Image (cartoon, rainbow, N blue to C red):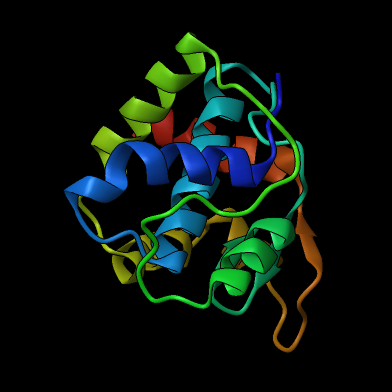
Length: 150
């Protein structure tokens, strides 16, 4: 089952905000990494039901960015507003915990640097001064499958 990016972000807020700072950029990147690894490990099944765009500061789910912007905070500790009730399955929650174990110790700037590295999906798609270039799931899958063999 694919979830909204806000549902995934709210999972991290509810489960992890008590352990340290969750900034907007960290949340956006965590959701991106979760979706990317989910695509890879399930051979194309989507975790998130929204297309990803290549913006100046990295990959972004536009609706998640808009929800975070509404909060207007540097640190997020309360769930983001969302009008759709979605329950994350036990298996998917365990998967999100593994993503946290991989990336949770990094801050937003460090996570952003990972998405900006050479040959990443963002780096291949991003064009200066654009904000709506889609990063196809196939490109994300290509990039992360290469990481499996590294």
